[in-house]
Amino acid sequence: MKKVILILLASLGCLQTYAQDTIQAKFSVVDACDGDEVVYTNTSKVPTKFGGANYSWTFGDGGTSTAAFPTHVYTLDNPLAGQRYQVKLVVQSKSIPSEKDSVIDFVEIFPNPDATFTWDVDNKGNTQDVIIASQATTNPSNFYQWNLGGVLKSNDITPTFLHADAKPFLDGKDYNFSLLIKTPEGCETTYTTKFNYNPLSVEDIYVERNLVYPNPSNGEIKFKEALTDVVVRNFAGQVVYETNASIDHMDLSVSNGIYFMTARLNGQAVSQRLQLK
View 1 (cartoon, rainbow, N blue to C red):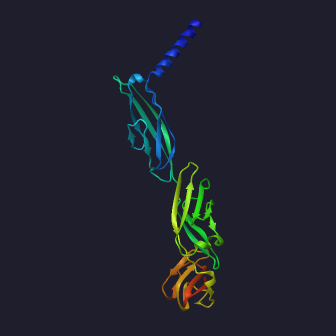
View 2 (view 1 turned 90 degrees about the horizontal axis):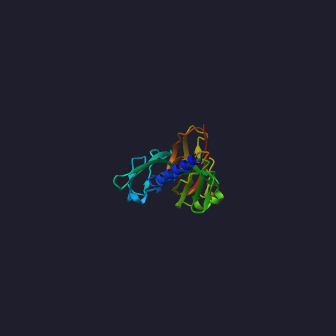
């Protein structure tokens, strides 16, 4: 029995020695985001007796490399969906005769979030709240960071900046309005647009109740005097009609409901509630 055990131990020792004396292809890689540089860590074993080795990589997207420690940038076929790539490493000794080994592993490339958005101003007549009119991504698992003018900030998915806070930015000047989104996988995108809004000052607006006729109307509206800078908004504050020209009537092709018009009459800011039926 002792003889059998000794033979087994000797065999295991030979196998271990053999394993240590042969080429072993091995590498590690960390999943990454679309467009980021992926770093491959080559941990292959090449005994000195082989005088070094040549490396051949295929990255699963048509890309290849012969570097010992390569990097590679993946571009997703669909920027909105992640993709898994099969990576193969072949290690071949420089000795003659040569010896080689290969290994296959996978890397996951995650999509970057789409941070595009549009903004609007909810004009309620005496207050103007800055609202998000549309945004491409609203996944609650993401991190959101909104920034208006470098001062107003929010981590809400879809924030509203109230008039009391937004008022300093309602002066017609250009301000950066940005959104950064970061996914649980660490992929992030920042989108920046221009914010520029100059409402008629609340103090300047004069409510002229008999400014238009008929009111209610079917959309064909006349003015008692010519108006300029006419802006009509729906109940949500979205602009449905706008002109800087001097006009004495307008045709609104909109759905029935309540609308709010601001304009200038002889240099005076005026407003009028409209009802379409």
